[in-house]
Image (cartoon, rainbow over the protein chains, first blue to last red):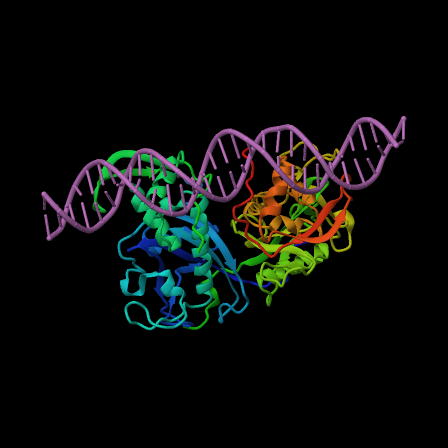
Amino acid sequence: MPYDPSAFPPFAVTVDLVVLTVRRHALCALAVRRGESPFQGRWALPGGFVRADEDLSQAAARELAEETGLRAHEPSAPAQDYGAHLEQLATYGDPKRDPRMRVVSVAHLALAPDLPAPRAGGDASNARWAPVEELLQQGGYGRDGEPVTPLAFDHAQILADGVERARSKIEYSSLATAFCPTEFTVGELRRVYEAVWGVALDPRNFHRKVTGTPGFLVPTGGTTTRQGGRPAQLFRAGGATLLNPPMLRPEV
Amino acid sequence: MPYDPSAFPPFAVTVDLVVLTVRRHALCALAVRRGESPFQGRWALPGGFVRADEDLSQAAARELAEETGLRAHEPSAPAQDYGAHLEQLATYGDPKRDPRMRVVSVAHLALAPDLPAPRAGGDASNARWAPVEELLQQGGYGRDGEPVTPLAFDHAQILADGVERARSKIEYSSLATAFCPTEFTVGELRRVYEAVWGVALDPRNFHRKVTGTPGFLVPTGGTTTRQGGRPAQLFRAGGATLLNPPMLRPEV
DNA sequence: ATCATAGTCGTCTTCCTGACGATAAACACT
DNA sequence: AGTGTTTATCGTCAGGAAGACGACTATGAT
C-alpha cells in the first residue's frame, strides 16, 4: 500500500524545556517572555519546533544551547563534558493546548549548575530564572511585587511534572550533582537537596550517607572555604549513577 | 502574527502500546503481525495514528480497547473500574524510524491481568502474547521452533523501555496489583513480582512485607485454594499507590 | 580572644531486611 | 486412615541503614 498522506492528520511537533537550577537556596526554572500571540507578554517555558531532519533529543539540545549556551549532556554521553543533564520528560498533546493548531510538545528536563544571567536571543529582559513556587503559584504577587501571571499554554503542568521528576530522581540517582559545578563540597550538595526538596537535612547524617556510598563522590584533594567556616573537602561526581540504597526524602 | 503553516514541518503522530501481562510465570507482551509494508509479516507493537480531535491518552485507550477489549484505567481514574493500568511511557521521533515519512510515536505502557486470547481486528492469528525475552532476543528460535525475527521499526527499544519501566515501578508503587485479577492472594502477587523481575523471592519475607505495608492490601474475607496447598486469604488492592519503604529488587 | 559558621566524626536507638525454622491446612496418593 | 506434597503463615535472629543528636575542628569576623 503506497504512502497516503490523507490517512493521518498533520501535527506540529515542538520541544519544550524545563531547565532547572539552584540559585540562592531556591529551585529555579528558566522562563522566557512570549513576544507573539497567543499569550503575548506572558512567561512560558523555552521551546520551539522540531526540524524536519532532527531527532527529538537533538532538537531539545539545540533549544537548550540557544537559550542558555549550555551543551547538553545526555545520560549516554561520555560524561564530564561541561554542560547540563538533559532527558526526555513527557509529551503533551491535548487538542486544545494551542489555540492556533494541533501541536504535540515533547517536553524535556534539563538540570544545570548555577549560571550567569540567561539570554534569550540576546535579549536579557525576555528571559529569567524564577523560583518554581513563584511560577506555579496561582495569582498573588511575586517577590519583586509584580503580579503573578500563570505560565502560557499548559506550561504550568509541564513545569510541575518536571519538578516532580527532578525531586524523585535525585532520590535514587546521583543526578543532584548536575546542579553543582565540577568541584563541590558535601555542604553544597546538601544545599541542592534541600533546595530541590524544600526541606532541611541533618548535615551529619547527610555527610555520612554521601561519603559512605561507593562511587558517588570522588575526592579531588583540594579544599575550599567559599561557604565560610571550616575548610571543606572538594569532590567530583563519581561514576555511580544509581544510588543504592537511595537517599531518603523526609516525610512532609 | 498570523498562523503560518510553512513555519514548521508536518509530522504524523502515532501511539504505540507496550501491553504487558503475566502468563504462566512469564512476563508477556502483546504483539501484532503487520499486514502492510514496511516490515510486512513481522511482529510489532500495537498502535495507530492519533486522530485530529483526540488527546494522546485517549488515543492510547482507544487502541488498547481495539486490540484487547480492555478499558483503560488511568492513574487519575475513579479506580476499581475493571481494566488495565495505562500510562505514558516515552516518545520516539528519530527521523529515520519509519522509512515512509516522519512519524513521532508516543509510546504508552499498559499493565493487564491475564486475559483470554487476544484479538486484533477479530483475527486471532495476527495477535499473540509473547514472552518479552523472546521478543527482545536477537536471532535464534522461539519456544515454538519458529525462527525469531526482530520486532518492526524501533519497537524492540520501546518494548525494552516499557519492561524496564514496569520492573522499576513495581518497586515503589502498588502497580503489581494491575497484573492480578480483582481478588488475589499474596502468593499470586508474589509470582507477579517473580515473573516481572525474573527472580525468586522468599515467600515468608514477601508475605511479611506486603501484609505489613498499610493500605497496600485489603483482605476481602474470602479464601481460595486455586493455587493448591493450604487455603490462602484473598485480598484486593488497597488505596495506597506509593510503597514506602519500597519493595527491594534483589541484586542480580 | 571570642564568637559565629561550617565541616567532620561518633554514639545510640529504632526500623527493615534477609535467612531460615516451624506450624497449618489443603489435596493426592496408597 | 496415613503419608507425602504443596502452599500459606507465623516467628526468631543477626546485620545494616537511618534519624536524633553530642562533640570536636578549623576557618573568618568582631
